[in-house]
Amino acid sequence: MRQRILIRGVCLALTLGFLAAGQCLLVAGESFAATGPGRTDEDDGALYEEYDEATAAALLDDVIEFGELASLVHEFNPTVKDARDAILDSIDEAEDTRAGLALERRDSEDRMDDAEDEGDAEGYAAYAAEEQTYRSAMGSYYNQIDRLSRSLTSTSMRQTEKAQLKTAYSLMIQYETQRLAKEQAEKAIELYTEQYALLQTQQAAGLATAAEVSAARDSLLSAQASLKTSEISLQSAYEDLCEIVGREPDEGVTVARIPEPDVSSLENIDRETDLKYARWNNSQIVTTKHTSAKTTGDTKRKKATIASGEQLVEVELNAAYQSMMEAKTGYEAAQASYEAALMQMNLADVKYQNGMSSRVDYVQDEVTFLQSQTAWENAKLALVKAIDTYYWAVEGYLTINI
Image (cartoon, rainbow, N blue to C red; front, side, top):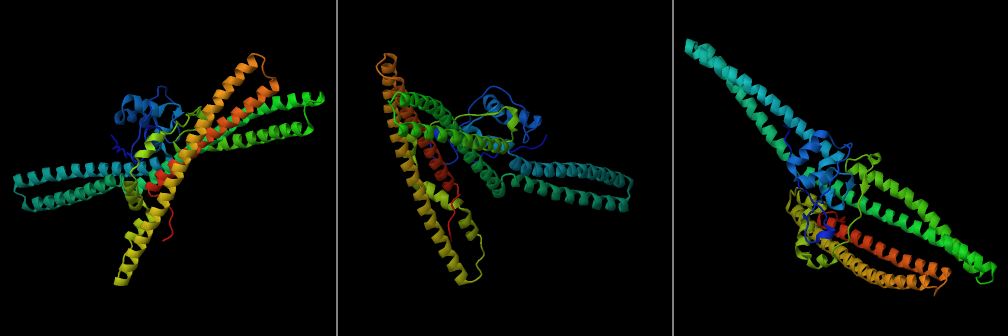
């Protein structure tokens, strides 16, 4: 059976407590999906050997979950899978060759024994040399298999997978952003259409101004334009997200909502440890460290460059942290405003149902509530993006000029 090695990689657990790199929760699912471009039936079955039943089922269902991205990318991303399969194919070929050499070596050993029994010293020496050649070749293939196996968890493979995973997180956030924009535009169109019609009626009765009618019309046209834009962007993000996790867009795959971020867990971030990892993971610093220094002057310049890079990483990581905390503050404020707006909307419902407000006033209350709800949802995604940026900065994705 083909060797399979699970590289646990990195994953972003926003809703579970953003504590440190490397934590991940896989959400259990139930139904099974068709096999996508990055998947085979053999791969699907093998998942049950690597994961518990609930987790394997979740990875194979028709829903892409935020908490599943790390495993989906590892198992089914075409780039990652092709790179891994190429290595595994080479291992298979080397193992087959080594097995064939083992048979030949055993045959030489048998002939050696026969020559020895027959007193054929010349034949014995020839077969002994032949057996040693096969033994040496087997050792070479053993070393080759060992090197190939280790390459499955090499830095290059990990970086390839991390890059794909980073893109997957970005695409899912992008998809969620456009989905919200589409839903907000659809609701706005519904409300502004009614508001525009009501104000036209009021204008005819001398109860609304032309400016009010024009403003309502502009709001409606703006919402309609936003809907068209969001629909195009949503479809593009959906197709790209499906591709990166090895699925076909026409398979009926759905994308789950990004859960609410666990704001309280942000207080537990170990910034000192994160800074250490951000420096250790930064590719520019790593490259500089591996640059040869032939003279004393070269060594001094190399050390100065590394020190400068580490300082820049600290500055950039601090900036990402501050942005994240500002996004957290904005999210909490927007959430409080939304909760207050919800109470006002509930009150508006009661007033309208009891005939204490007009339809025009009630629709305006709905518009005001939609604006508050939109602000809260957008603040949530702003926080998710900020956490994502900080997380990947820790993983080494910071561009610095050194």
